Image (cartoon, rainbow, N blue to C red):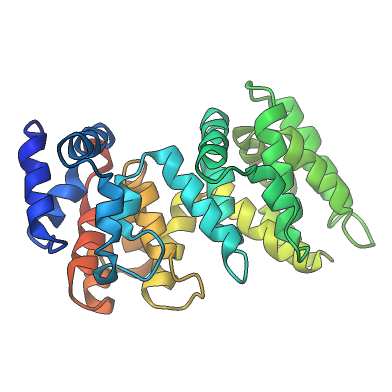
Length: 314
């Protein structure tokens, strides 16, 4: 597959009738712009959205509404909107998928994701999270993070990080009673992700250990378990994603879509670093573990291609 003859590329895809084995490596190497151009060309030549075409043959990839390849071909904001909608529609809300969006995207991107969500599903993402039937600690945290993307200051302040770290200590391990969730949620709702990361670094500097250790020691309950996931995703995303990939490949998680979701969403951001951390933690290459544990076929080939591509090529 070439980077410039998109009509030829589209003909190869169309003539494959879903048998994309020979095209998988090339599709996985396309940049975001090239995927957009490919999709536009396919629409112009065949009068059908490429995503719709791929979904007709998605049984060979996964049982998810959108296959890994379909997610890959979507623009980043559309993709996150689809992931968010699927997360909210599951019998058990997939809070981790939502956390990865609200923690891992810039505020400007979250605004575009919200717009895409409204355009695609005629619904408000923030309101759908608020209106979840069964209250959950993750729900409170996600509402706070959504608010932070609208309200925070762009500049990062060392002074604010120290003040917030002290407030977290005083309401947590520095208190004899249960944690005051309202204080934690207020900080999450008013600070940017970079500011929160600095706050957790300040916490470790002042008190000599990670904030997650403080949560485990304290009386946080289910709220604490949800908070630990969010803090880990903020403080060390490459370690967070390396662990998510490992547990997903080894089927140690109920989040069946996490493997494809993480590979697709991080392939153009920090996959090189995730691979390095993965090998350090598990003493095996990410691609090799996928080959060992996932049945052979187009789906596995595509995941391996994403896992082994260079982030710098995007």
